[in-house]
Image (cartoon, rainbow, N blue to C red; front, side):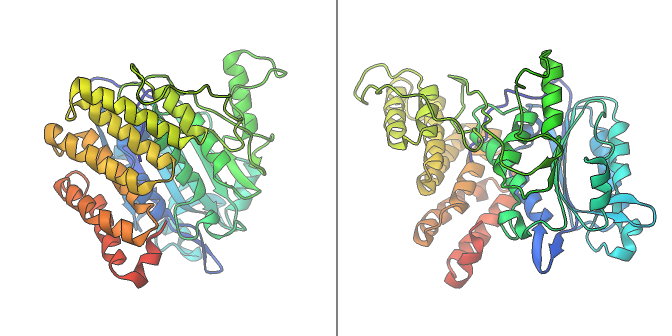
Length: 455
């Protein structure tokens, strides 16, 4: 997965340090079906570079909490995160519950039972209170929750998650599904739809979309069940857009979800994120919501033998989102030849061409080629940037993601050892990536286990 450059979001600052806190609460299960698997969600989100989650390039720490049983442990970590002087990103996934006697909301932690809610869960007001105490820096809160039968009436009373709206410097986004939500949100036991779309949209865009754009795209593409609470709602987004632009209520809002109110009952209309024509080091990608308007009619592109291909990134994006993957590949190869002739095959410019071809292959569904191209880019960057470089890490993460999407067992087995070898060089950078690759490779070598490894 090629995570786009940071071009929208929090501005960087000298001397600041950001913080990413990912909290996996208790899983929500109904009739043997998993409604939300928070550990899986957090593991997937942790593969996104911290700078991309934060929307800036400042140094940042990332902490993942899973399997925690003591709410005071979570509170301690939360206070450390809130105390960071740089940007903050907090993600919470799991089961939202309530103390029926006190009518207070809680995020259930591992081991929480109906009788132990007050002692083994994180009070929702603790989370809101810590965010309210934050005195500096921007904060983004993203939630992917399922409310149980005790919590759902409390959420429905206010039509939103209490306390998050109006916090100074805090942007809050997310979804809360009810206790009757179909198991697995379409992917039983896997990454839930809303979180998966956040990750996918971050991986597709050459420049990071704004948080509100990510939220709209994710909510629109996640296949949410009717009755799901979306925060902010369509009406809230429209009101914000009107207020910000000075439009009357008769004017169309710049950003919207289809349908008023706090409940998303149908798929929204198209929402697009502008893609700049040329961003150094960026890769093209599709970031349009469902039912996107068709691309304008395209003029024929000069053949690969034509001189002066120039910088075709905008054209590559247009071809790719129009499904003209063969033409995009021909143009990308022609551009790469020109770059190699001018700068050499081991140049930064040439490696950027390889990374763009990798993302084009991903968009075309050719995950085998995409994985190999990302590995090529990672090895090239490793030679002159070192194992601790963020660009090397991004290339390895892209290779790993694409390799996990390869369905053909023989092809995955052939590429797997090379990927594991690259990740072993980067062991100190992110050992979780290596463990994931080794586990999948081992299972692929045992045919009866490999079926469980297709996300």
